[in-house]
Amino acid sequence: MACFCLFFIGFWCYFLLFCAPKALAEESCFWRDGDKDGLLEQRVCLKDGNLLRVEYDRNRNGRPERTEYFHQGKVSRIVIDQDEDGRPEMVSFFRNGQLVKEQIDEDHDGHPEKTIVFSQGEPTRIVIDQNGDGKPEEISFLTRSRVSKIIRYFPDRKETLFFDPQTGHLSR
Image (cartoon, helix red, strand yellow):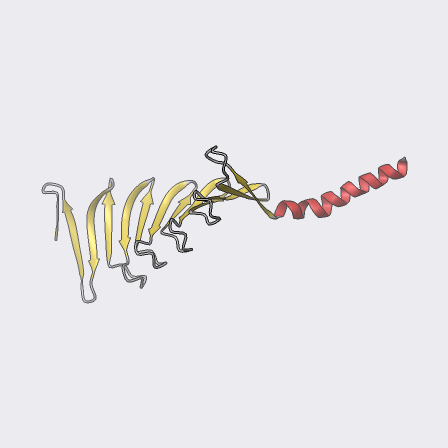
């Protein structure tokens, strides 16, 4: 009996030292029925016991239309790929659970044309880069979610327009 107890204790010590840490460090995923309709459409992935990402496959074809990534229990990024071509139409970035930036690919070419910057949940700046060269053609500055100033960049000049609250129009 004592031999069996030593074997049993030795087995558990071996398992806890060598097997359990490796098993916990690996990513594990499972499917769940998020809308309770009897069909599985959410894939939840964990690593080290922490939520890593949740993939939403609403049409249940195996390719997620929406993926939410988490860091320390808070959402850090949301990727939307509605047409499921592998190039997201929108990516939202979060810091400490607060939305800080959204990148939008309006023409589905894999390069975002519009970037919206947020501060305390409110949009403060919209940056437009239509040709994808990394240099904006237009930057709109917002105050209380309303445009207060627009800077347009041309090859040979820059134009600044200001919002006139009296007239409700933009002017130079």
